[in-house]
Length: 244
Image (cartoon, rainbow, N blue to C red):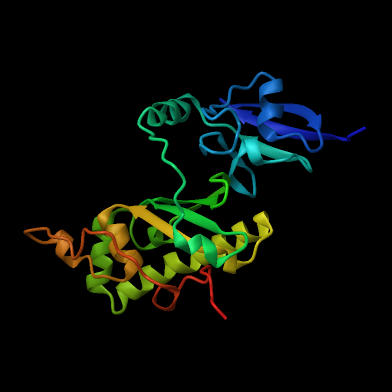
């Protein structure tokens, strides 16, 4: 008989203790105890919408999270849940097309990174099945140099090596989280063979170490708007496939 695991649920300002069998998915445990968790793919691990916050671990896909020990879970409030539901209406299901790079590893994985001004979210994707294996989020470390894009652009222009400082802050935190994702999935950094970034224009400039100064001065033009591709050697990211 499976032992029971205690889960403290923080929701709408109330904390409720539930118990569930060890090994059961967090999504099933929540649903079986009357909590509604948005999961448009039915818990198949393909949509990444059933994310909940687990204390000391960050955002996790509840359908892919097996219960092993007692945890604290923070569910999104009604406003956050509404955003999750409405944004799915604009989601387009596309076929998995990892490209030739998937041949670089026996267990090829990719990472989709959403670089927000405040929060950075990483999605670890199995490039064989297309399943989102794990989701992690962290506070953008650049916030200590400015809460918005304007103050960060000013930082790059008024401080020596300001652009390099902001780029390294982000890259260092990305490397830490990528290592955590590899440990969670039981893979090495060599198995992450492709990373795709999305973000506003300023965040992408800072990621690549390109001066965003022109974005804050008339005629407010970006240094680039097209898709950029770069390799490990000039990115600072450790989690790329290395051919030996």
